[in-house]
Amino acid sequence: MNKLGIIAGSGMDIPGLKFIEDITVDSKYGAPSEGYKHFRYKDTDLYFLRRHGVKHEIPPHKINYRANIDGFRKLGVEAVVTVSAAGGINGSLCPGDIAVTSNAIDFTYGRNSTYFDDMEVFHIDITEPFCPSLRRGILYSAAEAGVTIFDGGVYLCTNGPRLETAAEITAYSKLGADFVGMTLFPECALARELGICFANISVITNYAAGISDRKLTSDEVVDIMGKASERVNSIVHKIMDNPFTPECDCRDSLKGTKITNG
Image (tube, rainbow, N blue to C red; front, side):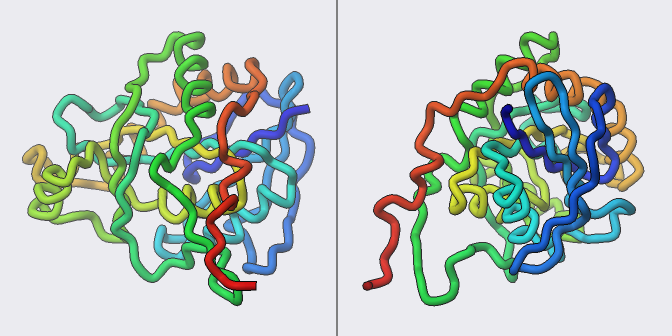
């Protein structure tokens, strides 16, 4: 039985699955955003978590990312797919488009971003922050589902909760960012530290600041995310139709990275 984790915003549900139970996971890092919803589909156990809580009451800079990812580890999850709303910077991406993120830039601060900040120090390699095997699986599943999806894109993660200025977006574009969001870090780095395969699906919900002359609103984000949810759900179902077989080094992520003596 495969075990797959999904992290998404509060507006996403995955219909067509057999609900098994709600699971409360205790972590030494504190409480996860909510309980994990356990579903079953064919030969896959799926554990679903809303990163902002049931009512979207947790802003991005206050999410307990360490507890969320550690909870998946305790549940025996081997691979986590996250679904994120993002603002489009690259002009070829329009609201409603879906991309499988290929790399990322971290502009967050003040977040608990490692499990190794007490007695032991590990410097993990995050040249490629996303599992190549899991990315290929998502792309294959999207093709099977008949969903158009962009292969690649650099996600720049800001701290939030405010949106960005037009000048910041101009700077991010010059750095090579294709879209901008607030939740990818430290999610991807923490998963790598725990040896969990991790990949991200970004839904472009709006043009980033200054890309268009329209005022940015949360209503627009919620509306576009809702309209994209059916396509995202069909991809997730196909992922579960094709049991994930890791052909990557994610599980050996700590090998050769410990710098503490002893």
